[in-house]
Length: 507
View 1 (cartoon, one colour):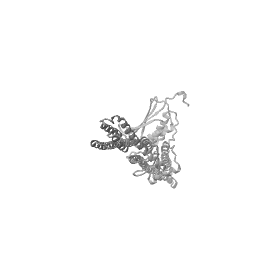
View 2: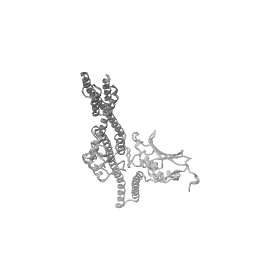
View 3: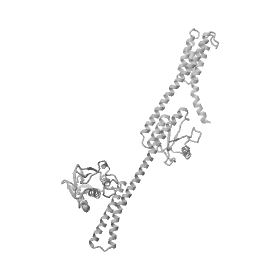
View 4: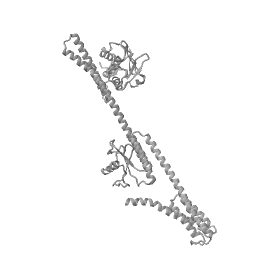
């Protein structure tokens, strides 16, 4: 009952003030016109009072204007139309003029008030339309739920002067017990229960509603087309009525649509991520199964032949070599999987020290001795090449993977070139071959995990080049690839390395 009395008093108090104001102004106008009482110009008073009524109708309500019109007619009759101080009118002309005055005053007041009301409504509609446009514009710029909530709360406060915050659902159609923004606002257990009730029943609850609870908040469910994003909590000073209610509901609808858009966007992204993960899982599983099966089958077949047959010594040696080769291939596969895992987890520790590049290249050449037998490896090292500061182990794997990759694609009896230089405090390494190169439309994906050229006849998981890039990045360097003009591909590595101070080098 107390809330109802407060609302009624808020609605009636301005009206009462307007009635008093209209009586006061008509009284003052009559007093100002007293000098015209005893003259033949008492008709002029009617025009003065009509003018006053017209002025009042521009800023008072219809009730006070009607009161002013009636009161002005009675005042003119009582004080100014002969005989004075009586409502009796002797002249027929005065009766006609009084009637016309009364009608004109009423019609003028009513019409002016209606025009003013229509103008006010037009301004309000324009203001609300502009506010909705601004809200839609700001929400269209947002990216992510946090930004949508932030903009929504700011716009509500700007246009309604109301503090509010939003509780979202958790993706499983249940409210989360916190807000993405304004986490300082903590709800009591009862208030959180009301929020859950409003969300599940999709009905307004709380203050100024039929589903009233002992709370200062009004709970507005956010309704979407495909899903309901959550609940908006606000603290309005009074219930929304008529056009303001429609304006508020439209405002809330825009916010709900923006939140639903972000929810659906996140869900679609998760679906794409799961689909991509499933695709990568199948690719990786099939590749690993194939790559593991070949060396394992080789090892098992060679071992079985050694165990179950008495072969000559040269055959046993050949079988042992096959086992060793297959073991190397299996070990390389495992190393690649471990290296890509290190890169993705960010657990690469770079241990820089001063090294002679000749030692690095000789080590890699020796490890790839068998693979390089069908090729000619041309090594060109700048005469001014200083000692370089690198992680020997990581760079060994970088060169190993690049040269090994060339041996798998370049034709036999062709040349694989390795050139090194040192310019502007950078170690530059170029490796080129005479293979088929890469398709121009796919060259940008060369360093992507599991990338393999469609026409490739070689095995592998497609991890070698992504590992190379990861290790070069760990050195804060860069690697690029391009097809040569003649044939094949060329990889260019640039790694920053200061010139060594000889005295600081430990032997």
